[in-house]
Length: 87
Image (cartoon, rainbow, N blue to C red; front, top):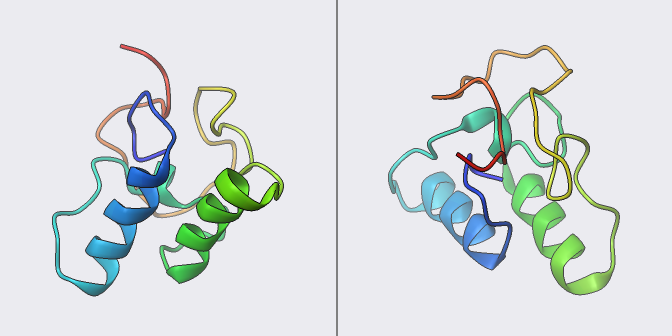
């Protein structure tokens, strides 16, 4: 989700720390946008947690089950051209 191979609770924790505790920026802001709204906020972390623990729908593609480029245009940047793809 954050431009990493894994999709787990650490993704939500990293995003929450970035949003509220001035932690390091995620390596791929576009991948951290779990609700594909074009901005990072609390709802992205909630979307991840809902998927992981409550059986909610997966974040939109590319997401935890598929990798590739985000088909939705926005201003969020990513250090790589794909998100969630193994190196």
